[in-house]
Image 1 (cartoon, one colour):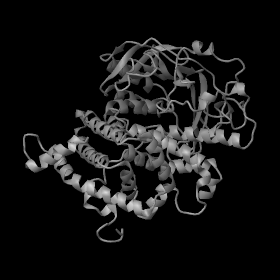
Image 2 (image 1 turned 90 degrees about the vertical axis):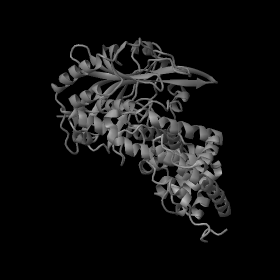
Image 3 (image 1 turned 180 degrees about the vertical axis):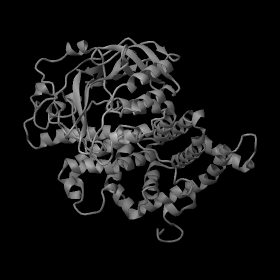
Image 4 (image 1 turned 135 degrees about the horizontal axis):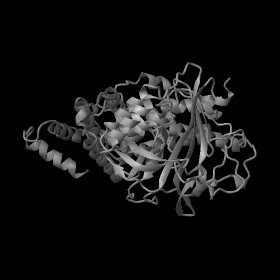
Length: 210
Length: 365
């Protein structure tokens, strides 16, 4: 495959697209919090991969990390500021309730709400990180990459991968409890108080940075 | 800080991330995989022609703005406008329209553009929609659908045009392509096919082969339920709203994709129309013009997010399906596109089953 990609065989790129379009799309969503931008990033990633085909190492395994590295760069140019990421994450969360109003299909709604809740939790968590931390975490967590692979993919030292992850973990730890409390509240009728003031106080602070 | 030490395990093992994994992953919206793949393959073929030193088309045949100007928001089988005369007037003399064996090697067959196509926005009537769709459904039950065997291909020819904003020297104008022929071949499993369309491909065309089947593949249409309620339920399930598109709009667009550049089995078409009648927000439109200039009635739905209305156009008397178009029915919040602009239009001119890829119906027998 690497040889064919380097040689610029159109069929190789057709296969590459079929195999990884979805993967790149999801990766781009995690980095941009916007499905529409993610689609643009996905498309641009394969165009860029085509242009940079000769940069592929002749030796190596699947081309997935190579594509994800390109996608990360492309996404960076689409979503420069963290403020914009948070705005997109908030918008994605807003879009949820409108799409749930289908009385005829009530049986689907419960699982949908649950999915929505987890997506929102994910976006909130990713929003709390700096872009560089987010990129490293997304590659480790969703792509299951080892630190060395992440370092190679993003062309950064492995020590940088570790330090970014360490900072990310600290932020997530602070957020996790608040997030847990918040999602439990959402699943419960508003009239019932679930948690004490402590959770509420953390939640307010967390909302403040959105 | 050593990543092998227990104090710093892999992020997948952190308690902090356990809530994050497993969230729902949605697929690309219907048709988008094919759209982007087509676009990529067209670009690759274009580049190969240039880098291989094949003589490029003469400057007068090429429109440098065109290549990078596909409006990314248009769906692939989205096409556009009605008043062919307006476009025809703007066609630069000397263009060879594609579709045939013309074109130049691997380059794209050039495609002229003209002023943006516009139309009268027909009056929408929500109450009339169920009755109109019921009549359309009955009429479609009288027509015969295809039977497609392995090895055969569905051939669909249409007249299409797209509208998109084009920027030259920082000045953006909205232009429409000249009305042109689009020819598509689809294998029954949706994993093989061919496309010939000026502006997108050369006269020889490009392959549509791939692992990812097209959404309107014949084999998958055959498997869809023909009970309207069951069908609608499946369509809602398969078309998760993405990009903030509400479910009803996504379902309507999905049904449109199955009806337009496809060849639905005889029993499916009536069910698709009956299913569409159950989607909230679907309206009847008293007057709509297809890509060939034929006036008809339309079944439509406004996408409130962008003010664009997708219209399926039917013959007023026979209620036969003529084509589809996308109209800017409400003024957009911003951008250069005005109300009444036809964003794409497509009229189906021929559907047939042929015995091989790239084979024309006239070549059969």
